[in-house]
Image 1 (cartoon, rainbow, N blue to C red):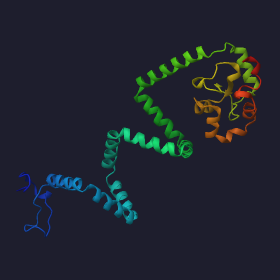
Image 2 (image 1 turned 120 degrees about the vertical axis):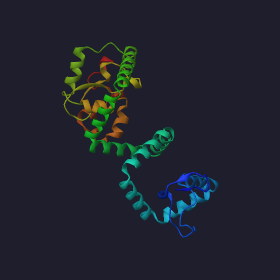
Image 3 (image 1 turned 180 degrees about the vertical axis):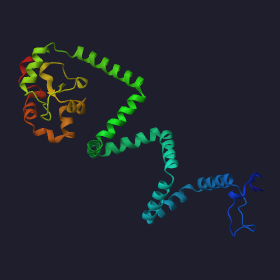
Image 4 (image 1 turned 90 degrees about the horizontal axis):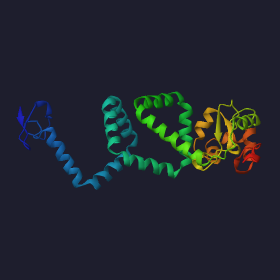
Length: 255
């Protein structure tokens, strides 16, 4: 055992590094002191060092990326832990970066997210299911709040014309089939969402499949079609778009 020349602490031989630059072939300082000295050196000349490193990476991008990939493969657990810790520490920074990237090109991100969802439906469903199971109390609160707000809005925006008979007429008028994709009818959707000021009246109701209803959510018809343009040429939706305010083509007299 020898002592560190910086802090005076004992260091095991394994923390020494043989080199011709020292008479005894060993480093004079312990690992902790060397790390502290390196950090101090970096902070004292941060801009120059960053510029030098950036230039080196640009000139040697392929070899640097290959080296980093090899390190990640050899240190998967350590890399995952470090990444997770950094993400937890910089949540606001990451959120701001994500928002800026989305604002710069929303169409690109929507298309990428949609393509990922289509390719990973099972993985996405499992992830959502695990999160809901791990956060059952939070999920319950969120659902109760959403249902409460929706009931309140519907009371304020209810025209009083929706009955079992008028709903049946809406369903018959469209096939019955999903007005958006033409698939089997499963739900009733508000064309103009309640959350966006739409009325709970027959003229604002259409049959929809569960998938389209869930994907549309609070989007207006125009916003939803921007995300799913391939549905714009379905027969029922063409009729719907031809009506004023996107209302039911057979129920306008019930507004």
